[in-house]
Length: 166
Image (cartoon, rainbow, N blue to C red):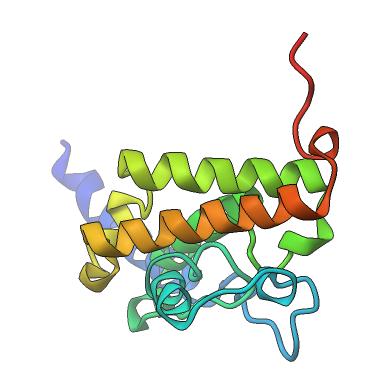
């Protein structure tokens, strides 16, 4: 009895798989200058920029490098969801457009997540083996995030960066 339903079900699934190939979300690609890029307000040494480019910017910027397999659905939807979540959490291309407290707090989060090994995500590292951060790279990234926070403390009153504890 079940054999009668298997073939139509398989044909339906195949047709659905073919149809969804025509529906792709808008790519995360910006044209031109990014006026709110973090590097416009805070120095990013070349070695740190290299680390950010290989391990962070695909999900935390307005310009994602898309591998070939994003041409296949539903993989593209899954990756787009990750990119959108990453940008919602922190977008280096929109960083300077945010409140000072937000900027300062995001650097605290960068430090915490890099120390804890939470970033880059394991699902990103499955395919992007070169994005795995070594101890020296982690140290450079942490030192840079701390220097951004130090620069902010030197430029702005501390109460504009952190809330007073009550």
